[in-house]
Length: 465
Image 1: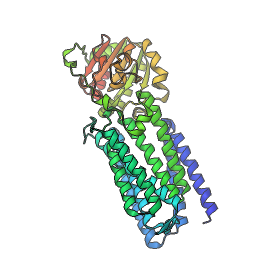
Image 2: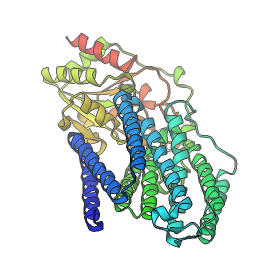
Image 3: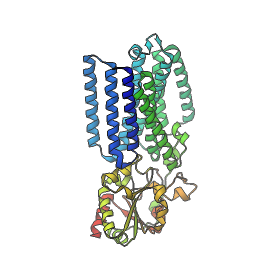
């Protein structure tokens, strides 16, 4: 295969990756976006193999690795529950980071195979590229593992604050830069592995101080890091497809992190540096059991909703845990049959990753034109008779809007408390992922429906029937 034709094929795969990102921006086109991405990746892999022209034994190992990896990926995709999707994404990010480190090591120990020189004379540019790629990859690897452990409940979601952590991080960053420069001058494998070790430690220290409420932003941030790691290694390999793909993932992850920071009132610079979230998760209200709460039953909720003219449904992570999306759509369909206007309101960080609620609602065949983002529907709560909050907590907390002393003050919320009645479905009066009490529970217009989200919704449907 000629180099020019290979470049053309890589360009085609890059265009397909761009189309994949565009398709994934909306549930109605996400399936097509996935197909574009898979076709683009198949073209990129095939072109790389044709360019490399590996021997028969090497080709057997490559095909075997693809089969094993693809088989594991297919099994996980078919069996993973939607509630575990955020930690799955974090786990996949860690593998991308580890791959970047291993490829950089292979290039250092066998530079002639990558056309970047010989063991004692590696091109300076290649040394800088593989050092940066390995550093970002190592940070992504350990950072993603910590994010996975926190999201999966295997590690406390509370922030772990080390004394002098900022000074430690700065010292490690300085050491990282020093060894990158040293590696560029000496090509010493010892300096390379010191870079990797420092970056691995830094990845842990960046993520452990971050509270559970900010994990959605962490996942997005690590997604961006994994992209830049791939792009850095792409320069080392001279692989245009890897450079373009990594740049796309890195830039799109950074943009998404910025959007989510605005949605959570966080500093984008703080997200990049990993020094945020501790004050939010460490705060918590403990007096909710002593305050008056109005509770209701499924019959009460059914009466209020079927006699309403407009109902806005606000799904959250509790809906995902209970797998209540199908029961929720059945409730909405029944209300519409009774002449009630029904809309869905989605907060940009509802759930534990961007688009979590949108995917669940699409799975239940909820019409796309009934689902609205925060900025498009917030003004309508004042005209709604009922706001049906199902498992969403922090994103509806009025303290973020009204209490300047609250750790989440300034975070945009869904103004469900402005509806005539707020029906709040939740297992208990416990705090949300941010670890603070929700003032909404105790407002006069709120009726708490304590119990499993799916069962409560099904009971409301039965009461209406």
